Picture 1 (tube, rainbow, N blue to C red):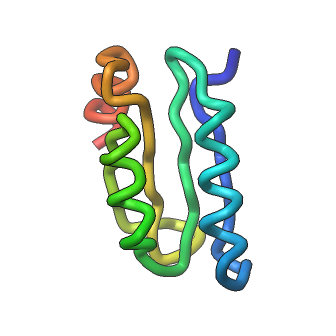
Picture 2: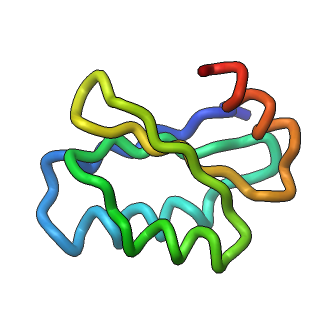
Length: 86
């Protein structure tokens, strides 16, 4: 099973990036995280993530402005992987 699931939405127009991100969250299993490549910070998504048991980290992107890493808050293994990336 692949640890990183990449979702590139930086060329999509609203509301498609939000819809794709929310759909992708349902596919995350234990030991996996979602990397969202986005041209802007999706602030409404951050509240949804927090309210639904996810954690996230936002970094400067290489392909677009932002890379947003999302994982299940209870998944300490993935949290360590994310911390080790940075």
